[in-house]
Picture 1 (cartoon, helix red, strand yellow):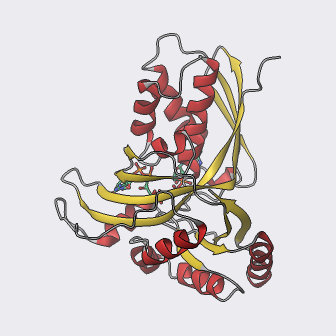
Picture 2 (cartoon, rainbow, N blue to C red):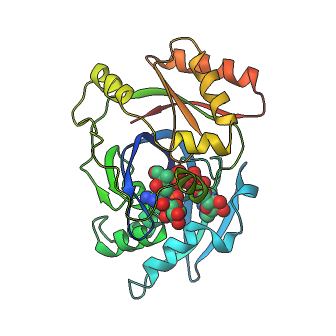
Length: 290
Ligand SMILES: C[C@@](CO)(OP(=O)(O)O)[C@H](O)COP(=O)(O)OP(=O)(O)OC[C@H]1O[C@@H](n2ccc(N)nc2=O)[C@H](O)[C@@H]1O
Ligand SMILES: Nc1ncnc2c1ncn2[C@@H]1O[C@H](COP(=O)(O)OP(=O)(O)O)[C@@H](O)[C@H]1O
């Protein structure tokens, strides 16, 4: 029986995100501990003679035109590098909020590369996959093998996978899109500006207790600039912090999604229920991260 060509494109969560400066090319030099959620989009590939994409699901209308979808961008970049690449029609079920700091488009693109690798018997270590990922977007390489790791540079330097303890979490998005370039711009750094000197905690091998204290000592440097553009992010963080047993509340990526961490899945579920009842129109999800 051939394996079905389908995969989950999990939400990417930046548990920490420190900006070390702005490079001469305008991109920001980051160090971020990235984890992945149990929730995400779904992608299927039906092999066929032409590369195509169909998008459905609750957040499909926000994801832009199919022609501009990162699934097709990544696939074309791979096809340019692998002669005779077999492809087909992708079916994307879009559930994650769009322009939300949880890398939905990046994770979809990475999922497409994984499926094309499977169809064409390419190992995930193949340089063409990594090149296509990097050229698709800064967050795509880390999503290629969605496991927790430290990401550096503009996303092109990846640490080894980390075996983080499972974290029980709530994700909240107030359903306002936040454009990543606008948030980086609001930081106000000049090309070549160096902010180094910030010590990033060593999170490798941390146990659950010390992981939480390391996370608390870290931050997301994009939180303040994102909040200056969309103050509702502050409201989401406040609501999260008011829930019972919330150990940490922080924004992911360039926002607007915020995550809360809890000791047990029951506490996370109760917090999600509470936030959803207060803000029925927001996107609220209890999940786990690792
Ligand atoms: C901020 C992060 C953190 O993981 O996540 P999101 O908020 O997008 O989820 C990422 O660095 C986003 O990655 P991604 O969304 O793939 O970025 P890209 O499409 O490559 O870049 C969009 C724009 O963001 C800015 N950019 C991006 C990454 C980076 N390290 N420095 C930057 O200055 C640039 O202006 C760039 O033109
Ligand atoms: N598969 C996709 N899913 C979501 N957005 C996509 C996709 N392909 C292209 N895009 C475009 O990418 C932009 C960033 O979307 P997304 O990856 O959701 O942002 P973020 O990384 O901030 O969560 C959106 O404005 C959207 O138009």
